[in-house]
Structures are given as structure tokens and as C-alpha cells.
Image (cartoon, rainbow, N blue to C red; front, side):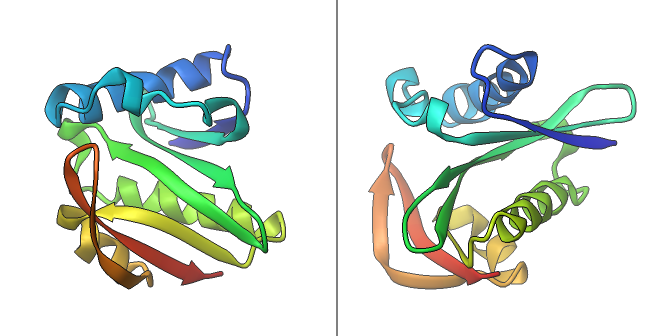
Length: 144
């Protein structure tokens, strides 16, 4: 098991992240590619969790913001690996990286179905429900 990160949008790591995002967001949830792949790809740090047999399990990305904030986005776990704590592993890795880089707050837009997951990880809901790609979300924050 290993988690690797990259900013290189020409790397195999990035392509592996995109393969998970394609499967989860575009195929399972019907998010259009023009929304899923956005203008922030090159500005983000992309994380990929690989299994012991080098299988691609989970991904997320971090978008640096201002004032000590960083945004966790595009967190996804391949269907066959869900419920096995891999989501927690990759988010904790992204949090640790963010803290080491000097960020003090992580913000994210959580799909309503993932609220419990993020709450268990210490994220707090802020504001009203909103739609992103026609999917209900809530803004959540965590001090790190």
C-alpha cells in the first residue's frame, strides 16, 4: 500500500487519478467531463492510493487557496474498495501534507452522501446545501 502525489498532469500518477475520477464521477454519477476536468488541474496536487499489487484504489486533489486554506477536492474510491478505510487513509495523507506545507484549514464541498464520513474525520458543516454538477453538497471545514 502506498500513496503518491504529483503536480505533473503528464504523469502516470495523474492519469491514474483521472481513471478513478472518470469511473466514479463521470460513469457512476453522470458528471460531464467538462465539469470534472477543470481549469485547476495543473494548480492542484493530485494524490493516488495504490494497493499492494499496484492497483489504483483512491484519489483526491488539493487546490491551494489564500489565507492558510487549501481545498480538498475530487476524493473518490473505486467501487470495489469502498468501506475498507481507504478513503480515510488518503484524506489523512492529504491533511498531513497540507499541515507540513503550512496550511491551517482544509475546506471541501462534500456530497450529502459523504457527510458522515467527513464528520467522523473532524470536518464541520458550514452554510446551506448547494448544487455542484447537479449533486447536493455542503461546505465543510477542518482546522489542521
